[in-house]
Picture (cartoon, one colour):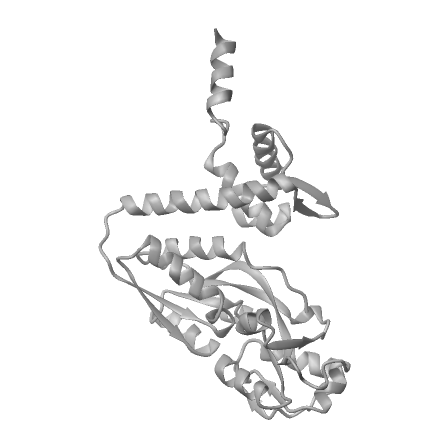
Length: 316
């Protein structure tokens, strides 16, 4: 009788009833990071405990989800398929849970840095609108120092962008979402694209991030490393509209976060010179006051985590 009941369960249910939300969240975190130790630190558990959770899920699903390549875990074909469906299912569950909560409306105030303004954050905002349509997202943009001041003074509830300097993090917490590099960009038909970057830089007008931008220091370090420490820019900006227009109308080269020009690169409107400097990569994530809570804040953070998993890895 028990065998018949078990067989009936196996035929009628496509997922084992012992699969829990913790299995799904752990799997998605590992798929995003590709590294057990990083996920264990983020979840505040030991790596063996994390490995056990993953092993439980693979046993319940009946197949391996990852292949080990050195220190990295890479999705198997089945793992990639499961990730796609697991992500969609988790988002649906979050939306369902949110739909049951009393809706009081309100406003969530978010500071958005240029690196996420043109590609990443609009996707977060659209998803947030689907889940919390009763709330208003009040979005403020501006330089890093301005948004940090707004965050500390309570003018915004959350900032999304590059990791702040360590000296600025007292009383704040940062959650890593993905890594992004600073690139050297030009119009797609720039005549010096085939030259070494240092030579092209010496012969072209230069657009740099402002000295107040958090990405300016690594750019200055790169210029010093290629023997151009005193190269004077023609323009300083991180504005997509301004930088893109200047590049289109001239032979200018622009140091800018990849996320700012992601769509221009995808459409082939801009091209990159290969700087090949690992130190130009940096963390992008959310920064908030440690003790601060606001309506809709957790929902927005969870959406940002989900969408961050779709951001392709980049190299300098």
